[in-house]
Length: 132
Image (cartoon, rainbow, N blue to C red):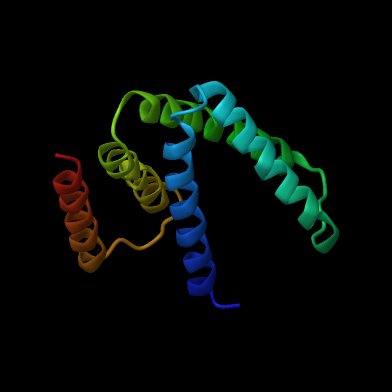
């Protein structure tokens, strides 16, 4: 399947997840909301397990650590949603794209063209305008 289809799946999944998170945040505190949401992710992954192979190696441990880092970000996100407006928090937290773009360029030697920079600047301006 083309990567753009997967991007669309991610966009829709995260879009509905974001709306559901804000609605559920009125009824659940940040920790139980994060806990049960992540349990839901684990259940989904377990259902997919028969279709994919999983092997343990040193990169598996790095992936576990990466999951811990994602958990820290998720935890902060849920607490932010508990305290503020989704229309501001979603655009602000979307600035996370800065980190992988810069690290991809610096450490993975991924190209960063003028077109990419202009797109990144315009996206940053859009995020700023949406959150102010």
